[in-house]
Image (tube, rainbow, N blue to C red; front, side, top):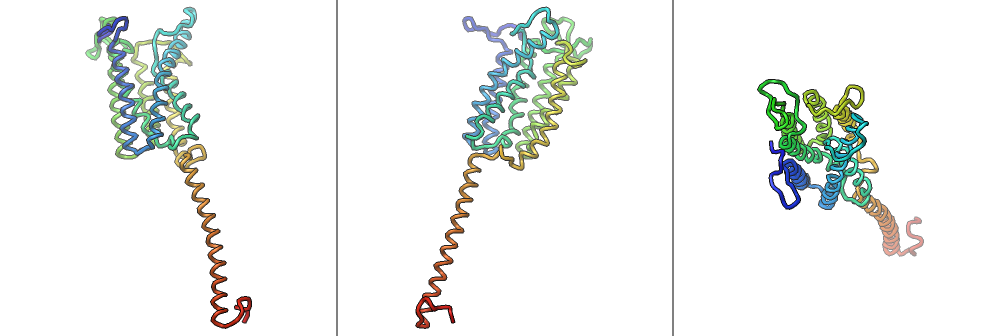
Length: 306
């Protein structure tokens, strides 16, 4: 564990936690670029998603702090509402998703790509970033587990008796999930990776909450805040399966500008073709009458009246 700053740059104190967060975010953007090229997504669409993701990540930090402040206030309202006492990943994820997809729907009419083509890549970016983030939690000594008194416990600076390193358990799970999702996407061309991520991480997070020791109070009933959102994630993952099936049928909102232009051009070409065919038919008839008149010696108007 490295809870203290690893070095300082003037007034700036650099912690290993921050370094791992930066590595995770950078890894996510690299994966986005590599996988988008492998899936042959439109370059302009990928660029838009890249900048949209940057804004989403920035907002996610504020969202993570806001959700934690809400949890703290629910747990101890007598202390008042305070920002900056911690962050929660799921809170950050919710904020990032709202901004990311909100940005897409705001500008989708100007884009030349479809979200259904990018959606399978998104969970790969999330899991790689989250995995490095959990390693950062391990270095910081936060988000640890309970004391079990077994060989599984590790000693943290603030817990001499030892506690479960649940941060490492979650990091291993996330890296394995990243590998599975990447395999399904690149080798099997699976379009349901987002659903798989939401369901699998929701189940894992719900279960591991029973051995985590960063108690944040009950949220709804006996559920912790993270367990409540885990249930929501699983439900959303199941619902998304049916949504993706509908998206595959190209509903109106998912048709791209280029597809609309192509359809319009095709329709114009079809109408033009019919007009040309009609003109060609009239010319052929006139030419036939003219040829008949020449061969029989009749006036052109009497040809074909025999």
